[in-house]
Image (cartoon, rainbow, N blue to C red; front, side, top):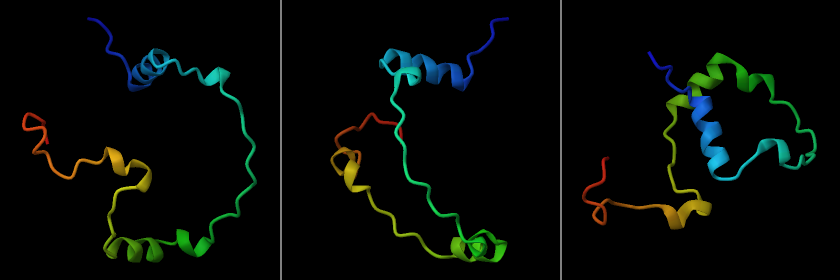
Length: 78
């Protein structure tokens, strides 16, 4: 029985197809960020955060790629 490819294998194949090689990418240094306050990691805080509604919007960087409805693509699987 042939072995199915793992998600990691498929990601590597796609990256190679697109010409991305992580071994040749430059490393950039970034400043060390401060740690997260421990109060934000407590169950009460996390539970309270999930009870609040989230304002959803398209990231401005991707606004041109957003399709508000599928009328242009009637054969699309939704």
